[in-house]
Structures are given as structure tokens and as C-alpha cells.
Image 1: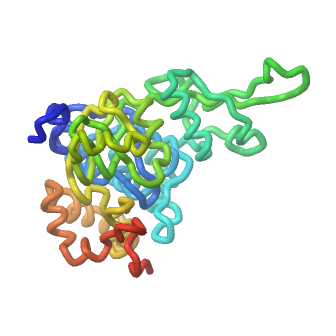
Image 2 (image 1 turned 180 degrees about the vertical axis):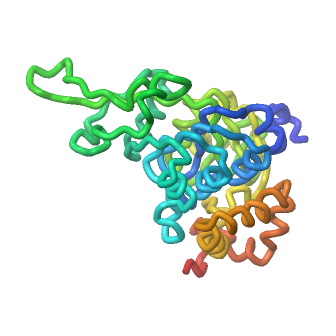
Length: 324
């Protein structure tokens, strides 16, 4: 289609999920709360009814909550899950933890970022002093019986004496993360496969570099010569990427900087239905199972709502959007 290296990696969301993700895999989610969630891939995972996924992310929101609510997740390692004022704590995430439906391990944002950084550098752990005097080092979520199996480290963390200090100087060792698959959403991908993320990258780059496979959804495909004109603006080289899905608005209802804002009306809708099992199942049927691809999903959202959240080209977000 584009006559370049990306042709080998361009595929549908259905093909990418079926090719690179399987039941029981450890999956990292790019984005943050209501920004650049890989929603298209999350909905496809649900449609393919993948189960027993082990999710790792530093902080997340809508995609995480949808996957947990649909019963796709068995284990979770995270610092925070929420969608701002619409859900200070993600609704299905909170319910799953309280009801014992998933196993959950808690780290800080900084600690999770360091764990991905260690994985991206090929290191077995990363040292830090952050969290030494908190309950994060005292409490563990995963049962002892599961330690050392699959992708679960044999301990949450370790505290050691700094070997270079002559006085008491403790440091925390955090186990590295190397997910099976990372899914991220970007604004641009070049025809050579180069990924460009505008705005905050959160932990996306470290997650991608630490993962065995990387699936990227994007808003636009750019010519190779154009994306190479400003190399300092690029985020990931082609050899990190296994699959590219060109799908505008595939982070909806979360935001994609310079393209569209988060959708308050849809997030309010979700807020109103997610707390009840029956109404949440109706939501899944209506917004996931009954819309088999991105085109049908956007048709259901409607042109009026898509135009309402379109971002100002200079500001990067929708000026005057009613966020109540």
C-alpha cells in the first residue's frame, strides 16, 4: 500500500492480536488514565475472548478497566488506575480487587517506571531509595505460592545495604519487567516503521523497548522522507515494532494530543453503567461485540461527537470542550 518497509507490518487489529497475543501472556498498556489508551486493541482482545492476561503498567485508565471488566485479566501490577473525575479509581478495577477476581500487586509510579527501564536496558533489577519508608515495601499482593512462576518475580522487591557505603544506607532493588507484548497508540508512524509520539510519552518507550513484541496503533502514516526530517521528534525505531494498525481515533474515548481530546460524554456514560454487572455487560455488547471494527465503532460514536472533541491544532486539545 505505502510502498515501503511498513507494508510488511501493516495489518488489522484482529490479525495483530491473533498473531502476537495469546492467553496467559504478560501485556503492557501504553498511555495514561485518559490519554492515548490503546482502546482499539483492548476492544479486539475482548472480542477474541482472551483470558488470564497478566497486565503491567505504571498508571492507566479506560483500556485497563475495560479489559478487567470483561474478565480478560488474572494478574495486575500497577501504580494507579483511574480516569480523573469520571472515576478517581477505575470502577471495574476496584470491583475486581475488592471481590478477589484478580490478583494485584502495588508499586509506585516511579517504581514501575524503573522496572520498565531495567527491562529495556537488559538489567535484572533497578536500585532506588524511593518508597523505603512506605507500606509498599511491607505489603505484598501476590500469594507466596505464585512467586517465581511465569512472569511473577520470586519476591516483590528486596532491600539491601549499599555495598559502597561504610554506614547504614539501604536501597530497594526492583525486579525488571519484560512483557510478552506491549500495545501503544501513537500519533504518527512513518512508512519505514518509525514511531513518533507527540506530547507526554509516559512509560511507553521503556515498555516497548522491554517487550518481546510491540503493537502500535496510529492516527496517520507519514512518508519516510518526512518523518526523517526531524529525527529528534521520533520516539521508536522500526526494528522495535512488530505490527502497525492505521486507525484514526483508535484511542477514543481517551485523548490523543493534537488530534482529539477525551470524550466527556462517553466517559460519563461509562461511569453510569460500569458499577453494575448487568449494565456493564450491556455496554460491552453495545460498544465492543456489536462493533466488530473501527469503522463501525466510529459510526456508532457519530460525526457530531467526533467533531466536538477534535483538538485545536495549536493547543493540542479541544478548546471550549464541556468537560463536566
